[in-house]
Length: 228
Ligand SMILES: N[C@@H](CCC(=O)N[C@@H](CS)C(=O)NCC(=O)O)C(=O)O
Image (cartoon, rainbow, N blue to C red; front, side, top):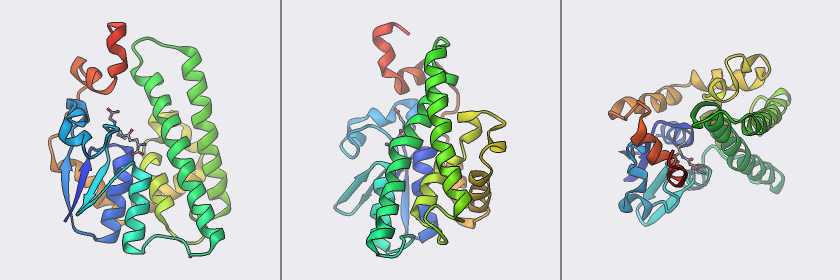
């Protein structure tokens, strides 16, 4: 049975959605990143990057959320676009755009707006600008197409959904006024039973929710030399 290493956060949420959409049986393995469980040797043997999600399926080990989406889509043959080179080129482009742009810039915007020990206007401005720029590109794509790759719901929409849930935290409470097409996709996917089951996974384990000194040490080890 598939083992799904999970914390309730944007990148694992994408994989939770795929697993629930596909109906593949899986075992949920909680990795509480606020307790530092991502740094345990047993977990870094699975994901050397020490981040959730990760997945073990028999002899196959996969880490990085969009790689896991591709793995599951290829395994099941589901939520993929048609097998033309043109459609696959678009799929790879948008999956990488989400993996290398949406995720990292949204994550850094959250970090500098909500978690940096001291306010840093330069960093906030850069990451807010880049997060907005990336989300605006997704919004423009969704203004032209019902889904990210056209008329069909695919793994790319699942990758976008994982982070779209966090947009107000990333960009501000009024962000949806400027990203109406992303909001439309988010609302549509949220209404799917699989998305509701994916959201409900967080209640299956008592994940730590508070932000204290131990959490900062687990999530921001770079601060140790600063004495922060
Ligand atoms: N590129 C990775 C990023 C994974 C990632 O940043 N995961 C976060 C949760 S959304 C995490 O586990 N963070 C723990 C940490 O940074 O220590 C992916 O797409 O899976």
